[in-house]
Amino acid sequence: MGAVAYHLALSPELSFIHTVFHVSMLIKCISDSSQVLEAPTIPLDEKLSYEEEPMAIVDRQERKLRSKEIVFVKVLWRNHTVEEAAWEIEDDMRVKYPHLF
Image (cartoon, one colour):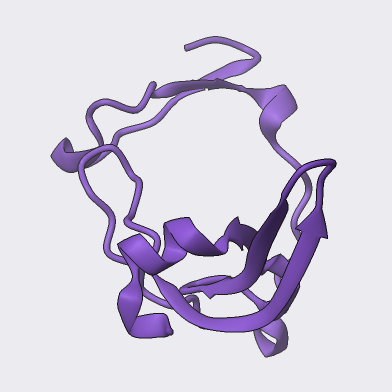
């Protein structure tokens, strides 16, 4: 495209992605084949997103407000690490994913 922009040739299934990028988006990379990791294959839809699925409940906590208590559960989601587990409202999780309880 020019001195500071590049144009990519993408496959047809990625046609909705903008094909021009600026060189400021590039970083220097020194290849070291001993540190290459296999990335898990995640099925993506046409918008490059995927459906989150809960794997397990790892913790439970009650939080008190002025007039009521809300019970939260810490959910481990598929394709995420334990550190990325999220607190969700227990009642909502029971309705959507009863097999976890």
